[in-house]
Amino acid sequence: MACIYLAGPLGFSELGRLGQQALVDAAHACGHEVVDPFALTPHGEIDRIEALGSLDPQRDAWRELNRRIGETNMRAIDGCSLMLAVLDGADVDSGTAAEIGYAFARGKKILGYRGDFRLSADNLGSTVNLQIEYFILASGGAIVTTLTDLRAALAAA
Image (cartoon, rainbow, N blue to C red):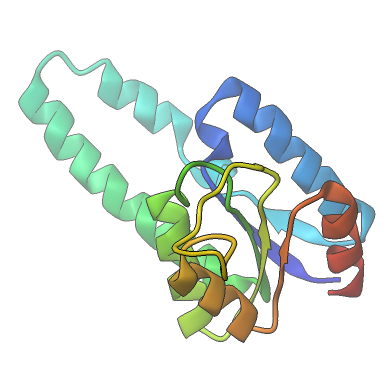
């Protein structure tokens, strides 16, 4: 059983969270623990900031919360042995790309999931941005394009 950090932008939308749950369920079915950075975010703090009456206090509060969220996510990546990164979209989400780079630098294995059939690569030789693809493959991981293949990769992890 591995601790898996789930990187990706799916938690930002209601429909995305449904898709994210399918990925979590697949990992749980293979006996893995999943760390979801969206679950680590203090939603009450976000509500408090949004209720502030002025832009200056909101900006200052967001700056502080953003730093805390970034540090929390960094520590969560450090605490897991595997990253599952959602690569969907016209381009890989910038936060996800940063998390992939950090995980690679920390020696974590990375699995990429791209269920999106649109082209999103630098050239015909890659699936996504070539640097992101390099980090995933060089980590000992793989890029999969179906939930069936993802389940098989998670079972082997």
